[in-house]
Length: 343
Image (cartoon, rainbow, N blue to C red; front, side):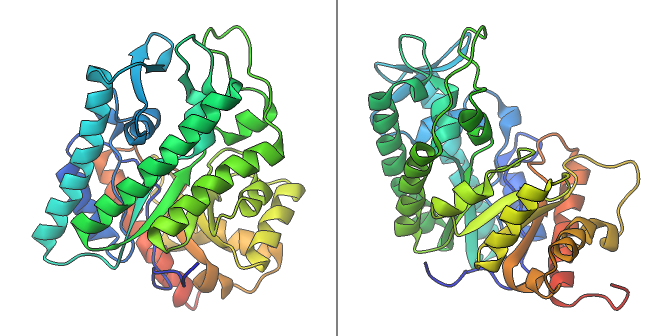
């Protein structure tokens, strides 16, 4: 892994934003998070713009279609698959156009992709079972996703001129590990996946992304109990999670060990929807400050090995709050490096 390409004090977003206009969203992100912007995701556009549709659009030689229970692998690309691919291409078009208007590429650009377990737990085989229930299908989809990630990274770098950092989103991983993924019928659950198997598959994608970018790889999980130790053992260089959630002692131990060993933590500190009372800078930073104090680290670690973000995606926010949330995390990042005297 190379040295992190983002500057100390940089902040970024998790991915999703409200709205349907990708050029407008890209311009806002570049303006509010100039040191570490991300490619906006706009799920309000509907079919193909959600996390599973975006993942399916990356698959090489595997197509999906939409059925009543969700996305399902199909023999050949149809309208559903082509729409997902087109939306993913438009997102890159939008960022490329916004960078052109700005006049210069950012130093680093983050793109978000569904992790292999969230994707394979969410799409079905032609006969109606989840991909994760079939070892051969799981292997094939994982390999297809890895190839698609490599191609997507190369395309993003070529079109933007920025260094690319990959973030894998794994909101579904805890359910995969706990055996709570529902079957397509909704009447049962899929058996739990053993941690060694989960680690092996995720590790394959992390290494693929690292080889494609030459940069650290982030894994994001905003579930109440992110599997931090598993993510570290799978090779994640940085782990993103919601720092506003209550953490039990075991979770805090895992986070502390990760931080001590050099893992960068992307700390979700700003609410995804507008709170009743607008937060001050100190209130915005408070989840990170409480975490570092509780773990017993010096607060200087926030400048060295932390990146502030919203608590999760901002798709449910108003456009005004989404912009304000990005401004706040940018200010929190600067305060990590130069804390106000009142802290």
